[in-house]
Length: 234
Image (tube, rainbow, N blue to C red):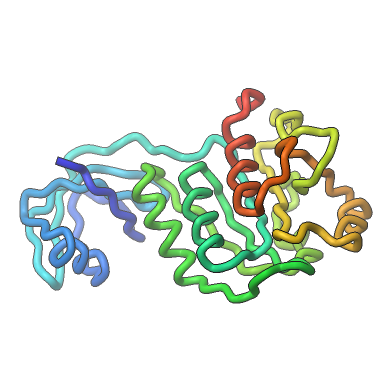
């Protein structure tokens, strides 16, 4: 029997009482759980398997069976991506979560296709993706940021790079210097000349992802995969 995973925003104690309406609706109406069913719960820091002892539409009582191994990304990656069309944004959020993005930073650049953004919808997507892929943590989402304010939106110890054709490959980054890395992904139309000047003036170094021209959403996921799993990682 499949062990379903659920994110809850509370401390994981030996005995839990859950009254979250969305979770209870899923358990009682969608998945039709009964007492005795086992589930895995995680809260961003830890995870454990619980047995549902009592379940109704208004609350569920659970007892812990055993803790499970915390599964978190090895490196802290900030994915700064120019806003795309709705379905592509959602695809980047979902797949980026599965690959280990720590923070998503939607960017508004000169050639951004869409500026509409729904924080609640974005949060729902990353939570569901974390539940599905086995992560113990849930990525953070920073509010949409103007490109030229990106430095102010990131912690000072984050090394920032821009995905652009370069003689430096993303795999050439010295991962031993910092475990906190951000990568800027441009819109479908690419960066403007003015934005490229901004990168140069602010010492934001370019790194190449591929010999080929990638679509924006493909570039975002490729960058994360290369940063997370490159052999240079500790």
